[in-house]
Image (cartoon, rainbow, N blue to C red; front, side, top):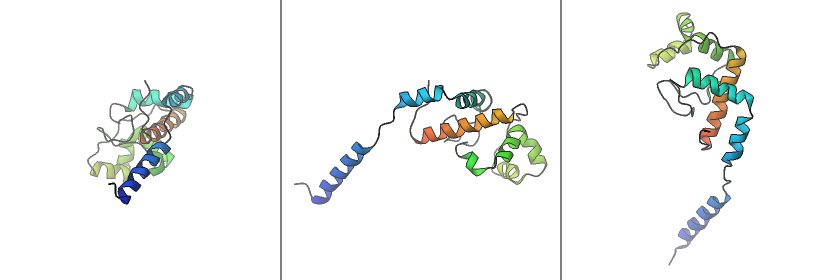
Length: 140
């Protein structure tokens, strides 16, 4: 015989499972492919960042996970750090020094990236991170 609490749990789990909305990966991938800013940022990421940062943005690779970084750091700081973290470290930037004390190396400098490039890059980072949190696989 099924005890009332067991029956409740079975019904609750069944209802919860059925109420979850399925993710339409095809629609998401079509949207991504038509989002020029996302595509530009993705291309920059793959070219300049993927050798150190994990593309899902939620795990540490040889460098920290980037997901949520735009909520942790101000835009001006991010852009300066991306362009020349060594200079910021030399000038005594607190966060750059903190990164070194945590065992992270300084980031490769990308002085050639324009504000437009960095807007696209960090847009991609945050969009990809949100998709990773929802379980959306990388598009092929």
